[in-house]
Image (cartoon, helix red, strand yellow):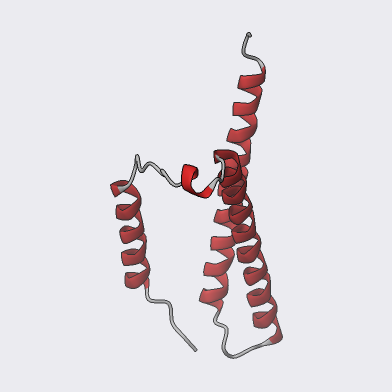
Length: 112
């Protein structure tokens, strides 16, 4: 059985936050070289995000099922943590969807 190291989780989260903060306006000049348009990149990013949320959901369901079966390698704290990760990723994806829908409606209502 493995235990959850909260200190390492916090360190990972802080390092990711620092990484994100240090690259706020990063410009990607590889569009001309690769021939991939911004729309293609956005679609790929969105697809990857949906797949990541789906993976988290499946991982959570698998861990719950293993715990219910009485698997000794799965602890309740791990199951709960994974369930929270899955829930949080789904909520974040829902918020992104809502913002995209709102932006689309705003653009469609703009006068020509």
